[in-house]
Image (tube, rainbow, N blue to C red; front, side, top):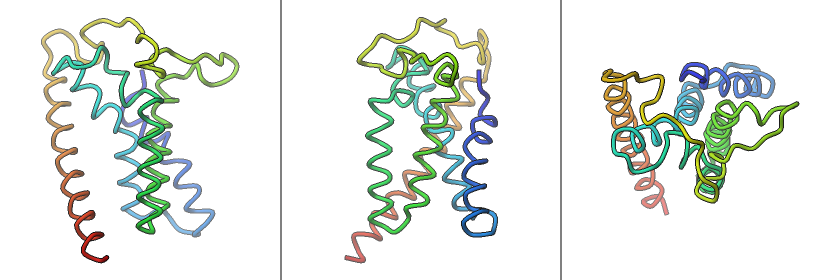
Length: 171
C-alpha cells in the first residue's frame, strides 16, 4: 500500500526535476499544489464512493481505472492548453497517472502485469475486504478521509468554476 505522502513524493520529484532543469528554479507553489491534488485525486474520489457511499465495488476502481483516467487526463490537458497552462495540466495528469502506477507496482519490470482494477469496468475488480486495511473496523479514519475529500473537492470545484467564468468573460 502506498501512503498519500508517498504518492505526492512520487509525483513531485519528476515535476520538480523538470522545473529545475528547464527553469533553473524550484517549481511554483501553484505547480506543487496541482501536483499534490493530482497525486491524491484517485483516492479523493474513489475511497468515499466505495467505502462511505458504497457506489463502486472497491476504492481502487473508477478514477484508479485507465478507461476513466486517460479521458480525464486528455480533457485536463486540453483545457490547460486552451488556457495557456499546459505545464499545470500536464502535472495534474502525470500525478494522477503516477498514482495508478504506484498502486499497481506490478506494472513495472520485471513483472509486467496489468491489474483488472486498471481496466474496470471492462474487467471485474480485484476481490478485496469490504473494510480497507488502512481504516480498521470502527475507526474514524474513513470519516476523516471523506471529510478531507469533500473539503478538497469543494475548494477545487470553486476554483474551477471561478476560472471557467473568467475564461468565458475574457472571450
